[in-house]
Length: 449
Image 1: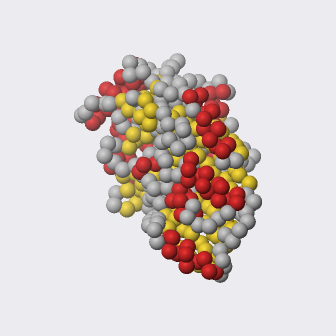
Image 2: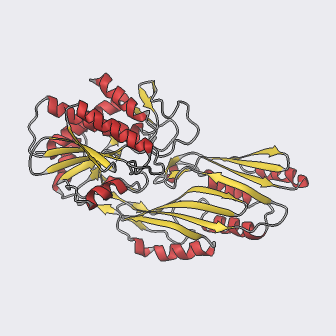
Image 3: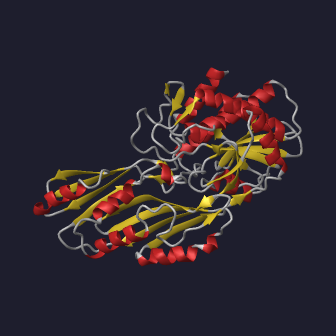
């Protein structure tokens, strides 16, 4: 069975399921659709009833009863980015780990949940409630898949979990605001920004960014000297152009303190150069109000509470040319605070940079009372499986728990394991995968009875 589980995870990881432009019958693109088809077919092969909900989301179901419990997994992944030791879609095994985009977030745990349910089925364990394993396709970019299911009358579980974060149990998730902004540029002077590009998604700390600048020949040496003050910056020459390369460290946008933002360090460097006019104004604005700040203090939107801590700010992407520049930001605000407490100040500060809003998306915070019955059941499972107290925690990350009632995040990252989701060389340890399957099987049994 172990070999079969590993091969099933590898097969899914080999499907590149980054969200793409929709096609007929493929609302999130071809890759996500293939991943859904793969998991539905796998579920049928394992003996489960399957349902495809208009190619938006699907699920495998087992058991009988009036009530249903759910495990919400997702098959979409963030872009792979650069810097991989092993190919991101080859699912190679090295040192007891399966490497690839989506191994831990969230294909490995989702398929693990399917095999946890198969173990229950094979052992003929009695359940009072039906169990659904959901295969979502849009968790990373909005959870529209789950919203579609709910809005179209999909049955809501009485309890459940999403294996898409950490153990023990996450009963609090910060609210999330994602925005994209653009600004027109009218450049003049000796220094001209030809292009700038960095980052792969709003919810990822960018590990690389570069700018291509046209500069006078007699200024090139000056730029090299300035670059020596920045350990993150490397310079290349190409005819009358200077290519500025900024190197950072990738991390999840909910924990930017674990990374180093290549874009913000690039902008700090550009602030040292002799730009004029529009571009200088924008660079100065950026460094004054955004810079390397991770908690929104420069923008005047800092918030904090005693459950989930400080507001988190991440500048995820920037792309531009000589005429226009755009950026994407990701804010995670504390569970006891509200969107309304900071959004007016945020918009006011954004307008100072003459940035025009392309979109602004908001997911409310989540908080589930510790006294809730299914929370207590998950605590019991955790304590039996790990032999320690099941603390309830709050995170900056957002999961499907926000999109469907009666769901919290439960696993798959074990205590002490590094956070590798959204990073190059993402992996899942095979031993950890197998442990998670055991834990999820116990959780399903407990919640379904």
